[in-house]
Length: 162
Image (cartoon, rainbow, N blue to C red; front, side, top):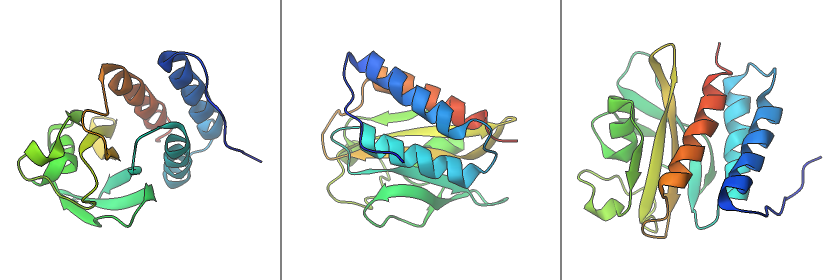
């Protein structure tokens, strides 16, 4: 049904194509896990120079994230809100874009090949649902444009949460 797509045009045009695909796949689908699985698959196909992409979900009333749908090597299963880039994004409900994870205090090295990271919180009705986490072996992989469009992608996913 789906095959690898060659993205062309400017970076913004490529991201707009990705956003269109995410909207099409999630339209009318209320299941969060299905939507996150498809989103992580699309991101894995779309993004260059990454070694892990996926979601961590808030575990009930705990201040802890638990592994959700992803693409990449096996990952840390649980991340407390007070640890790592994912924990900080969850705790502060703000995007964390880290040019060099080795300089981030408390960084959790699930994959030693990761050198930069972006983590974007998923929020519904003011409550944290989880985070989108993307790692790269390239230093300074993520820029303002990546952040802008990845936040738009997360917003599409947030709008599917009932």
